[in-house]
Length: 545
Ligand code: GLN
Image 1 (cartoon, protein in one colour):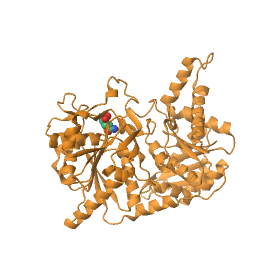
Image 2 (cartoon, rainbow, N blue to C red):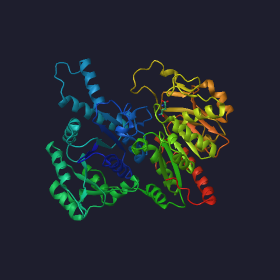
Image 3 (cartoon, protein in one colour):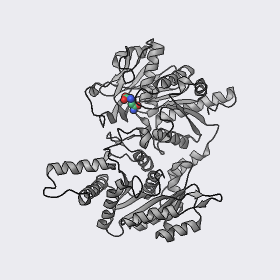
Image 4 (cartoon, rainbow, N blue to C red):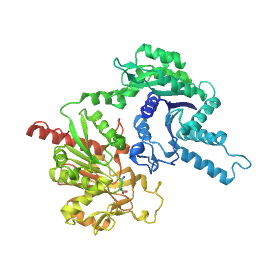
């Protein structure tokens, strides 16, 4: 087993997840079997109950694990689906240590962080590598070196490198090199301090990834090399990129691929980045005027809350070669602000993503109504799909008080209600209808055409569903149910009288990949492009923002 540990220094939010994903990509492009593990040093067992404002989007895996959003980056960069064992948290590790203690597995011993907790961490990493059949496992340690909570994980990795022996493990440290002052001087001191911190716990980095706004000058690289005791060719500059998919090539251009192979004692193979480069070339092309897509949600101040949606649109841009511009609308503001409504009306497409709770739902319903009436291409995901049903019930069926019982438990018309299996569920962690589920699509429907098949698997995360008692009335209002689960739940609604109006109970955003954009996002963007073309012929700029 070969291991690459990726730590972070100075501050969080440096793009350590992208760095780790990109390193994985370099090895995968060389034909090595690669996998990635994310360590989140918080006490939560998983990310499922966390507000998106804390750590961004909750990413759902096939097996239903509610994971850190970096798992999404790993899947997209590697083009591989991962399972819940790839996301370790302090909560998970401690839970299993405590379970073992209760069973009597440590009988007679005092259970301690070293060796029991560190032992559990090492076991978890080895198990993942083995189950995945990986030649190389990358381990990203969340947080910043020096945090109390990440100490046991770094200690476990130090022990692991000792156990694996020389030439089997590489430490990559990601730091910030800020640029300050009137002449824009790059400062290495924070990097020096964080490397010192790492060395104090017995870890000597082999590679330093220096993040910053611009490429590092050779003398700054030399200085970091000297002060941090890292080979000059192992100080790598990764300046901010327009799109994250550039990063593997930025690393490749500085020789990181051969360097990793050498550090890990792997054969130095030539990489194959052909498909990746084609994607980036098309992405940069930006032919024509592009499209303006409105995204209406309630966490719009933090873009990471909708990361997978944003990435799915990047994948469309890299596939179609047209610029896809996203415009974020806070759903709470829409009912109060006529100016926003006017801007929404000029969008070429609308996405209403998933969500929870009552805040902002009326704005989502309003946005969906605009898209339905004006023929604006619309994709509704999970809550966005449920609200499309509520909107139709209110305005087409004539049930003005229709709602989801999540929003109004006393509504006379619960068009969306709690899943039967959810009644009596009190724990909130890991108890939704989660993960990959099979869906049958109606032959000849729009969605079946887009997928090119009638059986699909998509990832889920919900407690509520369309109430079967309203099926007939929704059908009468122009909705066709074109996707159902084997147990009869509505998974897809589409309208025939509209250029593109599709709602899905599942989360297509989790399965979109740069090399395989999701068919529903592609269809939305294609329909939006068609609308933009007409709009351009009709009048001048249709820009939303
Ligand atoms: N709140 C809704 C439900 O639980 C939708 C969930 C979602 O959008 N992920 O069913």
